[in-house]
Length: 369
Image 1 (spheres, rainbow, N blue to C red):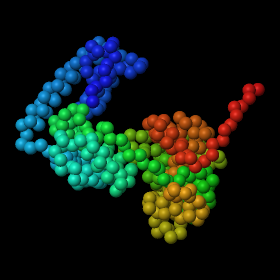
Image 2 (cartoon, one colour; image 1 turned 90 degrees about the vertical axis):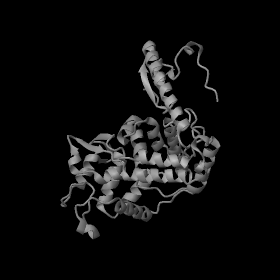
Image 3 (cartoon, rainbow, N blue to C red; image 1 turned 90 degrees about the horizontal axis):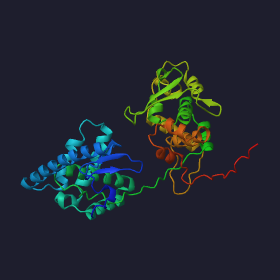
Image 4 (cartoon, one colour; image 1 turned 135 degrees about the vertical axis):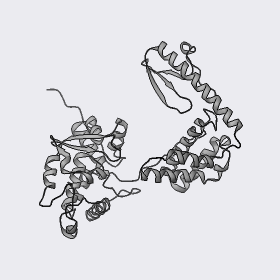
């Protein structure tokens, strides 16, 4: 497919230089797809992009010479081996496990035996369709993303020509979320049926702060200082750090009151810790995910919550969505976004979305005076 023609006023511009409607200029690397902002000075941007294009041309020429003089053209499966060896260095165990599974699914597909430069968009589409049938849309979407990156890597290594990534045009499989949203009434029903005080405290902390179960479990008393609860989100690998004011509240409960509730006669560093009953021998230790989740499920079943047809039962993680909705209503969407640690408004809106499970009241505007 031919590139889209430039506007007449931009036909003298060097390739790979772009400008948005507000006049901001940027460079896009055709080999990697990455972009770099260049400000609003056109003359300076043109000079920088011309130098970059010369370097790109040199690099592409070197890659083409290498590809033409190599002993044999690699298959997709063979390049998957190289990609895995280079890409999975110094990554977390869970990440390595997930990526290896995706790479294995790609390399073991019969179509992966083709030379990588002969792999077509139809091959990619057929592979992803098979993955969707056999593994479900979520895993198929992950496999598509990994395959797209594998071919991007192949371009940078000169195995296929720039702009020939066969996965680019393949639509991403759409996964339908089947987990039921949690309503406020369901939350309090589960809370009322919680057997352990540590579960009640965990539920309230999750509702007030909107943090994931992994972050709730690791909260410590020394994380509370200077009037804030300091949260370093585990999932974000230290990239998202949040200071939550302890006076944040919903109804009669505040972060401060729940923290106070967590203090008892058991010596522990953790807000959510074992304290009574059959867990007495583990007094003071942090409650494991398996134990907390099992206690949550037991309370949910005891509350006899009905799950809508076609959906799976609500989970502890759904409290995060309920928090987003309650805080967005009480304190605004910007507050909810900051509290959950989302980098974009769009992600917060996904959490606020009730997936068609609740009726929305149409309210008339209040009359002035």
